[in-house]
Length: 338
Image (tube, rainbow, N blue to C red; front, side, top):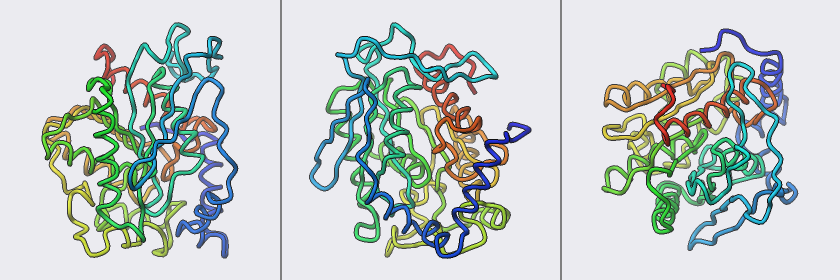
């Protein structure tokens, strides 16, 4: 764990707290109502010139496939680096989209109520960058309250089957998700293992919501300090519309209750100030006990889904550098990552 929080990281935390606790606006922010309205009004996403975005229509949902363009010969190298080591967020000059032929299945957050929006498309672009050119498949899965469990799980299973059918090499398939998408990442991986499907090469979670019963210690211990969900039970965390008439203790709903035997390497990131802190720590401990290669990283002073800050403050930037390092570790096994 880092020992200090940066000035920009502390400022970001304060801004999150203010945004989620302002009179009138705070309630809409915590319940997801504000995000829904902003998503409906947001402008069309500006795809970076070196990438192409294709929308794939499935029967009940849509997917977005982000890929490097082969017709762009001069792609500017990112100047973003990790000051603490030599890792760079970006690709080598000699890399191109047909060299790696890997893919990241990207499952967005939003408490199982929110749909995909432009910040998640920015995250997809960053996944492409830190992975040195992997394709990124973002799933706009069905959400509550209109489509409760198991709709979201059914959709991401279909997405994973699509990846396998397209012939992506198993040793270069990753599943990644944040918040509810992190929990869905683990639920999908449990489903894949339980149904004897080919497991991905690696799993990445950011602030994963794994315990929808809200029984973990951090739900009480961090209740007053969580800048996003703290101090109120009127938030997405306390909505039960996703599981509705289903048992919230079901491992496909609350992966904290799952068995992680046989899982591939995992990277689990979480913020120190989160009510959902124990959701990550408990799963990480179970995975370790099952013999899984896993790196859990608790970021000092950070809040829920702080990685959505992309590279705007050091802690978020460090998290993305770590994602890239994890992917390279899994692919090559030459780095001492864990």
